[in-house]
Amino acid sequence: MKPAEELLTIGEVAERAGFATSAIRFYDKEGLVVAVRTSGNQRRYPRSALRRLAFIRAAQNVGVPLAEIREALAELPDTRTPTKADWARLSRHWRARLDAQIEGLTALRDNLDSCIGCGCLSLQRCALYNPGDVAGTRGPGAQRLPKVIREPHHS
Image 1 (cartoon, rainbow, N blue to C red):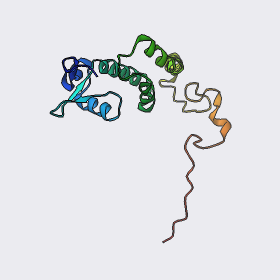
Image 2 (cartoon, rainbow, N blue to C red):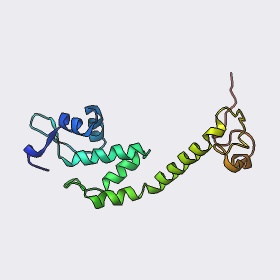
Image 3 (cartoon, one colour):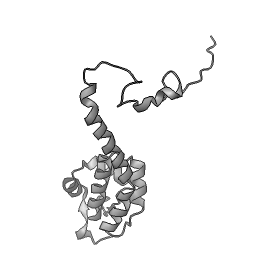
Image 4 (cartoon, helix red, strand yellow):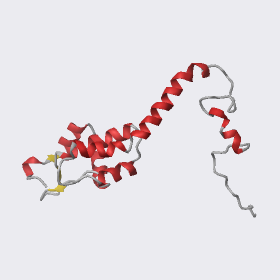
């Protein structure tokens, strides 16, 4: 860890990273950022925590679940600031997710005007919610919902 004068208080990290101190405490508890404790038991963070928090924010903005963010950050060194190569390696894994989101948003944009006010409510014809009637090939009913087996109720 860095000498004390190079460490930041939780308030300084919060202000610079744009997170609430409670969020930083949560990420600390989850092991996503690492603090050292002073003799007075106060948290102090290395400047590298700012980059880790920026990475967390960027990943959350594209819908990456916290579990995946945790896995990615576990690959980074705690003892040095992550490099551009570190970030490039991690973000490569999320490229396909972003491409799919872009494709979905493009389809939504391109087909939205035909849906507003059309009133079709047809899952068979709707190009947005059921392209090619894929859900219809699985049979009738709500195919995406899990089937619940209920035990007979005895009074």
